[in-house]
Image 1 (cartoon, protein in one colour):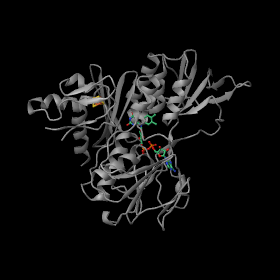
Image 2 (cartoon, rainbow over the protein chains, first blue to last red):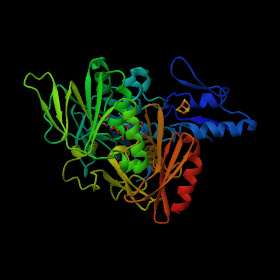
Image 3 (cartoon, protein in one colour):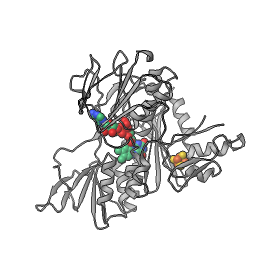
Length: 62
Length: 389
Ligand SMILES: Cc1cc2nc3c(=O)[nH]c(=O)nc-3n(C[C@H](O)[C@H](O)[C@H](O)COP(=O)(O)OP(=O)(O)OC[C@H]3O[C@@H](n4cnc5c(N)ncnc54)[C@H](O)[C@@H]3O)c2cc1C
Ligand code: SF4
């Protein structure tokens, strides 16, 4: 599983970070960082929840 | 036109749709020259934060610039306006007189705010579309100000929700009794109106408004049929018009009802496949709905940009997504997926603080609006797609 974020769409509201803090982090500089771009499959359901919950639909699993 | 015969692709409009087209062309291996012409002086930026984080003061100007690197650069000519084109000879004329010939032209000039007839220009009246507008409004507010917002569509409503609490009065005017009903349906439109009032926005809906300036020019008076409001500033958000004037009256390109360039499902606006249109200026044919749709939202602008690049390079298949939009108001997230057709039936499902409204047109489910219900989006999306097949 590979995670892709459209950084132009991302509004840094940290919804994904609340769901999967080991993967997404919005830092002090206001930007989102992906901490782990290729998490293993045990994380799939939690990543899917982040994908669905992102207000702007900026996250994709490719 | 095949990609190998395109030596120069000119893109007019250096904002979301134009910039993303250029980036995607390069990413997909387009070898020709790319020139991006943009009227604004800023590096291409995104507009959604303008009416939200910028007005609330929670983000900086720098944060809104579009990101992404390009392996092979393209030329970005900022502060330059395209003034017209010669379609037959394939030339774009520009304000700096460095006219450009092209083998492919992508029109990405977006839309500009409509100025209501009868509203005289004044230093106390402003429009809201650009980063400069947002920075100017942010800099001019003070806690004692009374601000009126004319038009309670997506942008007017967002401005109201961002300003309330920061200034003395926020008054939202709209001639329609339930603003936003066209996009959200009557149930959510009413919920949003109630929310505005609960959060302290004064609403004046369902009445025509006349605006006059006092003699000394120190105040505006907005006259409704039942009440008058004294204002220090009026922000106008009564809709936008696709920016096609520069193409000339007899360009031969077809315009839809809303004035947008009619494009096929790959973005072509001519028979030869030399001229394309993307973003707010365009109305693409939607294979899902079997008609042209004019969508003025972020997601469509990006999808169309990617699709035009796919088509021109022939590197990937064009992908048709359902229209999607989001807005944030008073801390709530509202999203729309698909479209709501006029007169469609509303099926309202409420669970805890979430509401989902489904729009049924006869037997078809054409769209839905979600209030704080984001996690249901993937499932709703497939329901709509299946129903449209
Ligand atoms: C305040 C605001 C908030 C928004 N919030 C949301 C949101 O929350 N969610 C959402 O889905 N959508 C939102 N949108 C809509 C979204 O931003 C637009 O759909 C998107 O910007 C369209 O991109 P575009 O590139 O087609 O057009 P535009 O962004 O309008 O860009 C067109 C560019 O072309 C330039 N141009 C025009 N004519 C010429 C010319 N002749 N020569 C050279 N350059 C020219 C213009 O100066 C402009 O920079 C918002 C829009 C605004 C204004
Ligand atoms: S939820 Fe979406 S918009 Fe918010 S920070 Fe994560 S990727 Fe960005």
